Length: 368
Image 1 (cartoon, rainbow, N blue to C red):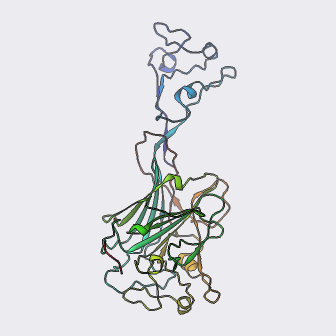
Image 2: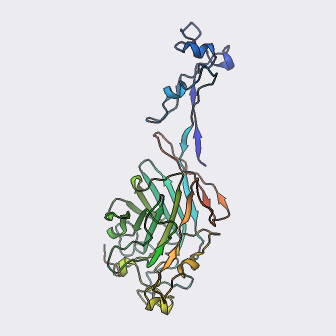
Image 3: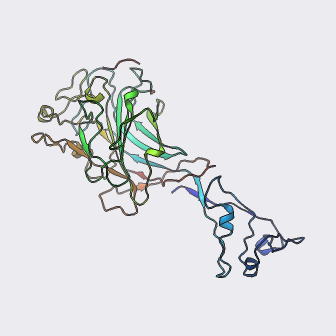
C-alpha cells in the first residue's frame, strides 16, 4: 500500500482550543490574525500556519487551507501526499528454466546451471523512470564481457497499459522474431523492451514507430544475480482505470543466433539448447524461451503456454499477459490466489505518483 502522510504546523497555546492558538481577523497579543471574517464567525478558520508540501505539489498549501465552506460549516481539507514509494514484486517458481518442460541448456561449460532461471521481477517508480529488476538464480558472470555487465541472458518485456497495440514479438533482424512466440491477443502490447549485454539489447519498441535504441540504462549486480533496467517514464504511462499487464520472456543470448536468441534443437549441442519437439523444429515454431514470469496459480502455466504452438499449421505458441496492476474496470481473469505486500522505503522531496505494491506468490567480445 505504501505510506501517505500530512504534517501540520501551528502555534501552541496552553489555553487555546485543544492547545492550538486561535486565529482572528485582526492579530491580538495572544491571537494570530488574517482569517476571513466569515470563517471566524462560523468557526471554520484553520489554525494551521504551515503544511509539509513537496515543491510543485497540487493542491498548494494555500489552496488546501482555503478549501473550507463557511456557509455550510465545512472545515478545510488537507490532503495526504506519498511519503514512501512502493514497488511491484512478482515471484516466479524456482527451477522452471526448461521452457515447455523439456528444454536443456547448450553443452558448452559457459552455460552454468540455472542462469536462465528467473526468480523474481521487481518494478519501482522513481521520479523520471521505472526501475525494473530481474532476479536470477545465477547470472553466470560475464564471460564474454558484455558492456552492460552480463552476457548469457536475453530478456524481452511487453507491457499493455491502454487500448490497441501489437501481438507480434520483437523482430529486429530478418530471421526473427528471436523468441519465436506470439503475444496475448486479449492484451496487445503498447511498449516492448529488449534487454541484453550489448547495444542490440537496449531497444524500446512502440507499435507503428521506429525502434528506439540506447535510451534505457542497463546494468547488472552480480552479488544479487540481478539485471537492472531504468526505463524512462515517457514510454510507460499507467492508467489506473485500465491497469497494467505484462509478459517477461527469458532466453539464451547468442550474438550469431536468430535475432540474437540461441536456437533450441531436439538434441542439445555445444552452442544450441536441446529438448525441442522434432515437428516444432522442422516447422520453425519451437519457442526459444526458457523461462516466463508466471506466478503460481496463474492459468495457463508456463509449460502450457510454451507448448501451445501448432506445428502442422505453422502457428507459434502464444504467451499470455499477467496482471501487474489491476485496473478499476478489470475484467475477471484467473489470477494468483495469494497476494502479499512489500514496501520500498525512499525519501520523497518531489511530487510523484506512487504505485501500490503487490507481491504475488505466486554491463567486448564476440559471442558464440
